Length: 531
Picture 1 (cartoon, rainbow, N blue to C red):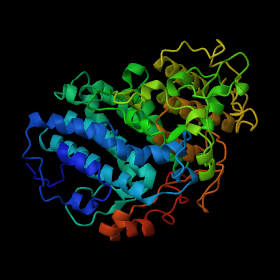
Picture 2: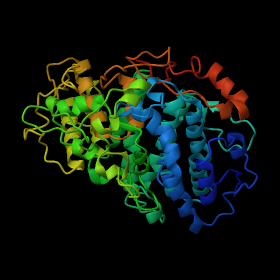
Picture 3: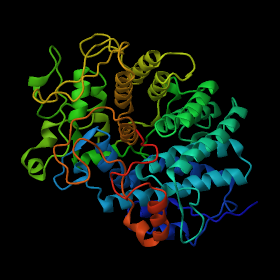
Picture 4: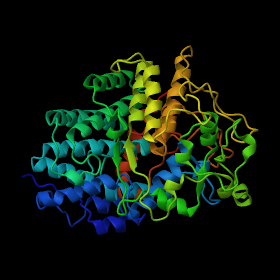
């Protein structure tokens, strides 16, 4: 058996690393303890897989800080779901706070990446092809979220045991994603009907190979759409390859989820206690205008609601706030009272909280709707068919009957976004009912807007889609403190972190000069951000 020296962190060291924002990545990459894949038994392998799954999903109390540093303070704001109420937090005004990003980067490479690599390598070296395929899919899912933050990142050389770890270009990473999914899908197909010995140690699907196949193929479709504007040929090829296979997440029972429990808590149930954010004006504008019944599952009624701008005949006590408030305004207005917190399921202190959704059926349909809009073969169905199926799937996910808050058919509604405060007009007039006579651009806005609603609270994906397509259409920021990023846009990426310049400096400098495609700031577009 080939001996591979890679970093593996025990549960205790995960806790220690997750609570430290200053650990050096180089030290992590060359940990002298060097647990190897050939001195771990198969009976212990399940624990590694479990850790490899819950760690990048930010489940468990040690992850609450990194979750805030990665998602709450950046993509939650840039993806349009929330607005910042904390007076001293400036990421909503486009300040890419280095210390926060350092913690976010270190958490992934200290806690998540080693577990993923170890689990995949162990399965490969111990002739466990099904388990190896599962971990390949999970590796792609985990890493695509990281490269979609920074662009070039350590990927193919991670865990090389050297003092320097090279960065891969995002194009190379994405092309490897597709190749990796090809490999994994082939194995999963050959294991039709099989169940892995991992059983309950596979937190996502309990070892069900058929479910993993649907996840892998739907993930390929997500990534295919991500590259649509930079490489249309690659995008169409991969999207239609997924359609030919035809194994998608189509029922909510197929959703890729991790159930929460007292050991794996939803991090929102911790960070909502800190009172640092509330629902955005964009959420209120879109969901109020659509009279969307999903709002009750997304947000709580504001402590001090404003009924003067409610839809006619509908009580709508859910209130949003504009992003980019000045420090003075945040100090002078009790936004935590006048704007909505998350729904009660997310705000019970100490509770496990809602399940973690990695991918759902609604997204699968919206992805195919966009492909059909391009004229691609998405497996039988028009853009309108898939669009409406996506809406229905999202409503069914929450046990809804398909009607809006006025009791009328949601998918047939001509409702459009509304003013969030009764004064400032809505930033868009995109209706719910599919605009069969509209332009491709108008229909794309409909698809992405409904996709955005259904993704909540997966803001990492929402921010990526906002950058990729420009949709949904949001209100401008009230203020920006970053002279390079105007109020009418969002950052295109986050910047590299201090720890990397200190301990992996040559590699990160080479990534900036040769692989990033621009300066290391928030205006440089990622490889796929080419529209």
